[in-house]
Image (tube, rainbow, N blue to C red; front, top):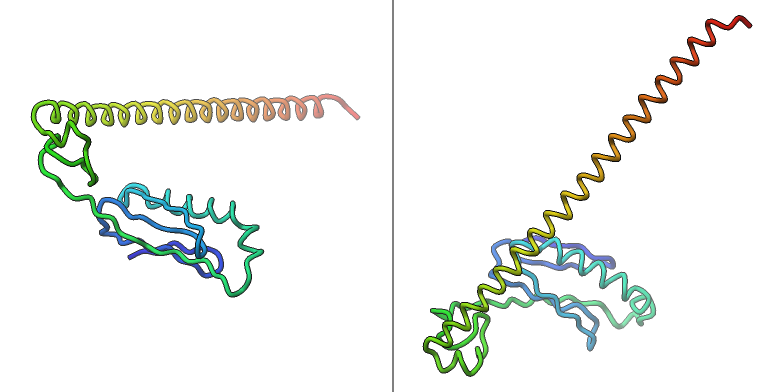
Length: 170
């Protein structure tokens, strides 16, 4: 079990051996914001999201009376395996639509297209992220090279100044 501290002694906890998704409700009494994250990959994203939510609602939290308090309730959602894709319900529960409910080749085809779409979307996002990271690294290298070049020029100018200072009698 690990905890993320929030201001005012609030804690968000999530199990290290959590199922596919953890859902957290953040709010005070009647106002809630639901955050669902993939436990293994996005636990740090949860922390960043909660900090952002806290900062957005900071003014309203300061205006709350002392009898009201901020509470965070962890609720666990488990993704259940439904068997073969396209044979009935969707992957995350609920109805998969009329084509999937009917089953057969069209349900399997729809499920395969959906899986392919999300796989390609994930691949595209990964490539984009990698490209952005490479651009940032290139900019950083260029900046470091410029700084090194400026340092060399400054050292050369200082060396030339010392040479001229020694040659010119005062």
